[in-house]
Length: 68
Image (cartoon, rainbow, N blue to C red; front, side, top):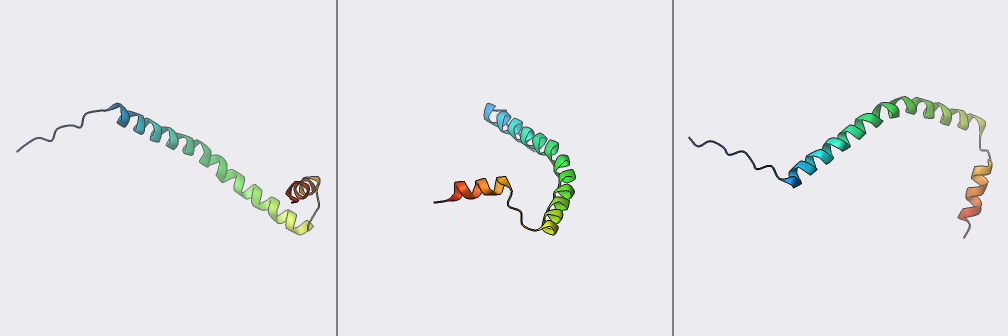
């Protein structure tokens, strides 16, 4: 029986694993915050629909910048 040789550890492989670990850590840090923000956003949308359309200064500025 032949024994399997371990793969040589290359710099490219180390950086790829480090990058993936960093991305996973960032996602894990953001996910709990998103879960608590969703119900508040849904409540805000429901309240806005009850009030009807409002031409706020933000909306009026958007219309000014969107003109062609």
